[in-house]
Image (cartoon, rainbow, N blue to C red; front, side, top):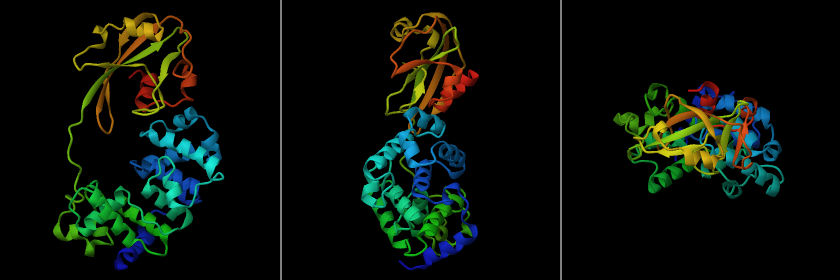
Length: 351
């Protein structure tokens, strides 16, 4: 592939790229890795405050490895896609056990760690170690699809393979750190999904999408699916001491590993106050004194919408519970554990 692509991109980066992101100074493997994981499916401006707080709490890989899962999840809460936090924690532990306390500089070894795929491993090698390694995140897929006129969905196996080939061909042999940041920056700030700023793009002369006026069509979107809707009753049980009953969610699935309110699936037509909850109360080990339905709200996940029906219940003094899966938490203790953002908001404001 001819060099003008990378050369033009690097000239643009020198003037318009992002040079002061917190993980760039200093650019250590740990800081780069943490940023790459947080940036998966999350925009830079959203990530920065979480990144800074997380780094303050866990300044090094050993600090993260020795932390409890609750400590990690409490710092991650609100950022979403919680499997990333669980993978970070396990990855840090494996690096301490198998890689002498550091992230390896090897594509295969990095990909063998939880939460690190081909592109993330390449980004770590490129930005932390200066190795020539092509990346292919969402921004890069969009840039390459438009530039080369690829009109099929990048999620298709053969299209993804084609994009990887192009990414490898365009990656230069010099200024790897800058090029890697540059192509991500271009996709994020210029070659955006909606309303791309083609007039500001350094690649516009060779861009097939621009020449054909098909920027809005490429890359092709994933086949549209109807988002399912689910309903759930969330029980906010409080005792006379103001403590709330929480249960730890399973390690996989939505809000995996976080603490949340006990949940009961509902049929869409059910009203929480009309459901016989006596058996559930018995299983939870509580005796309800009075109850009140709180305003309903919904929370959108990537693959479904959850309609939440909160029910606040005043109970007799909370009894003993299985320590590993449930517990009574004071308002002060809630600050130190991982809670899903909508649950934390409910417990804080009642809505």
